[in-house]
Length: 169
Image 1: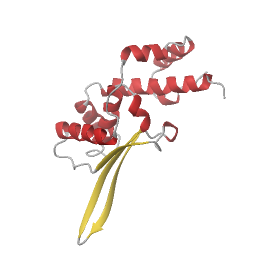
Image 2: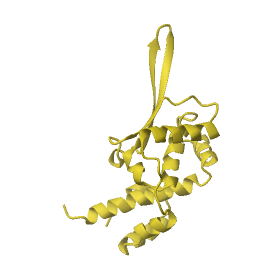
Image 3: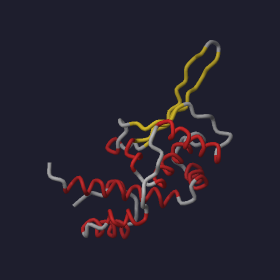
């Protein structure tokens, strides 16, 4: 049986439903019905434009972003679906900081809601560094169904693990 490592902290009743969907081989169908289709943000340039447009819409006073890209080195196993970094360096007599966001490559092939969820998550870190109440309120402000999308993404990751566990090596 697949472990539900992405669903820690969720209620036992929900975990039981997920286990049942996996056992009946219906979790993939459930997710496909909830999230049909894939987004069209495929290049790093398009991802930068997409991320910057969300920042402009919701976080006008947040610092600008210098670079955004799909990173094939980020993976679920290391528990990193996205990363934000601020790289500071001295330039003459001034300190400069570069803001960068990396999004795991697996998001190239996901529904648009999941891409938006991970970008919103990383953008929220421009204002709130910790995963606290203010951070999640900001995520909900930028994507009102943020928590549902996060759960559905966790279900997608669980389904991928279940498929991988069934595939002979």
